[in-house]
Image 1 (cartoon, rainbow, N blue to C red):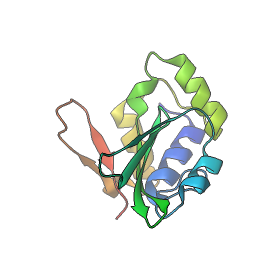
Image 2 (spheres, helix red, strand yellow):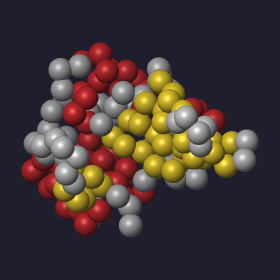
Image 3 (cartoon, rainbow, N blue to C red):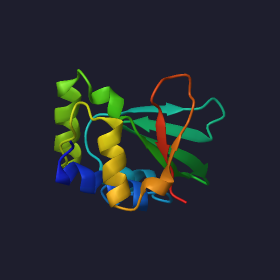
Length: 136
């Protein structure tokens, strides 16, 4: 079973689409101030999309004029398994300790208890057990 703090964090993330105050519509600088720690930026060939990868979370940005504006984020929980260094960096950057592994049933139960389960869909991305939560 996942802990209460983790469950609260995940439900808040799924239902609001915001992480440390940053969410869709936030500027790149706002996201940078909200989520500290190392990252890798990847800009598409056309210079219209930016992906900022913090290891556990990836932010997507679209170019709007001279500014990057966040369009979404992906929480990559599977990256924590077997990578305690990444888990520590995440905890230090965001203030929430996530378990290195969690059963889908536990995550689903937490989301159901927080009334966020309707946002979760199973998607086929060529990997087993891929789940996607989207705000409606």
